[in-house]
Image (cartoon, rainbow, N blue to C red):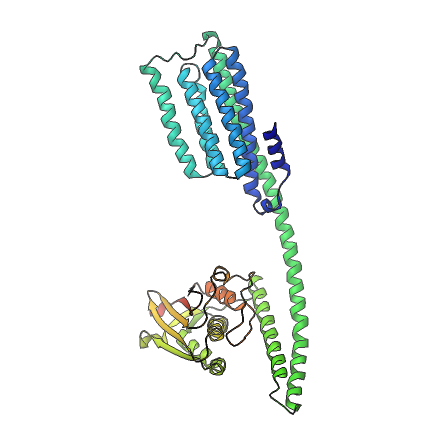
Amino acid sequence: MLLFTNIYDYFYGLPAKREQDILEYKKEQLFLSLSLVANLILMIFIILNYFNHKIIAMYVDIAAVTILLANARFFIKTQKLNVAVFIYSLTIILVTSFLHLVAPVFLSGNILWLPLMIFLSSFLSSKKYAYLLAGIGIILFSIAYILPVHFAITLDIIDINNANIINIASLILSTYVVFVLMQKIQSEEDRVRSILAKSRDHFKESNETSASLVALVTHDLATPLILIKHKVTQLKKEAKNNNSPLISEILDSIDNMEELIKEVKLIRACAGGKLSLDLRDVCMVENLRHIIKDIQHLATAKKVLFKVSLEDEALESYNITAEEHTLRVSVLGNILTNAIKFSKAGSYIDISVSRQSSYLQVIIKDFGIGIPKEIMPHLFDFSSSTSRSGTAGETGTGFGLPLAKMFIDKFDGEITVKSDGYSGTTFILKFKISPSHI
């Protein structure tokens, strides 16, 4: 009784964490339903076997009921669906093959359970377990069919008059289980589709609301920031001490906020399909040298040097397939400013360009403080906070690297990052070389 109470609680006491995977939860419900159906059928057979004096078959069915109930309890406690489904299916196959062995003439309907259990395991668990069950089942049923041909099996005595009744009952119950299984699967699929459809509608509505809110906030912030920046700049010019640290910090904060607004707008434009990238042939090395020149003042302030090397001088004119502005600013600019940000004063950034088959590879290596291991898995994730202060206290938005990754993906390129967490970081970028150079 306690087990059935546990099953009821499992069905109707859905924990919040399981809402994350509705389909998996429905499979688990289906498994428990089938466990109860199998136990019901076995209990009916126990009664039939008792009145027909099939003592061995009755004890086998009792053992099967005990195993299946214990297996259901095991699943409720451990949540290991694959293991529970395998034990369930294997138990049914063992019982049916053994019953055919002890009464080979009259229980030919038992073989119907083999494909049923294989199908069940494939649907609820995995194909690997289904193949394993198929192999075991074929061996067991082969033994159950072949062994009685060479040896007299008289473990159970069955009245010949009851043979047809037993065969018909076995076939009816087997068919019934198949019918229940298919109906349950269809019912669960319909319920899951309905829940997912409602979830999609809710997500779409929430997403539209969030997008509208972000658009409103970014738009309403941009104009006041421009005015504030203008006023602070005027204040700095009129101040007796033009190098006031306070005014400089205010201007730096405004610059950071403007950069954040630009990046949020860019992310929204890409996500909404409003940003159309004009992919064409662009010179990689030319854009690399251009962005280095643009951000040279940041490197100079920290006494950081850029060292650029080409594997072959011919690479100077190599084109790749990309959109020039986003390549220069959002990809190379973000990665290089990051390298400056986390470099130690007086160090250098090594940039090498080489050809790797049909790709142009750019390796950007700094010798700064590295990237902590706990941040590495989320480095390109917009929803994770990975922003850190630089070696000189520089701040950032945390969107730079996710944006770089997003655009590299749109260029059909690749980006990987390596860092031991304390002594520098290496970014490896690969871009498709234009067909004219292949």
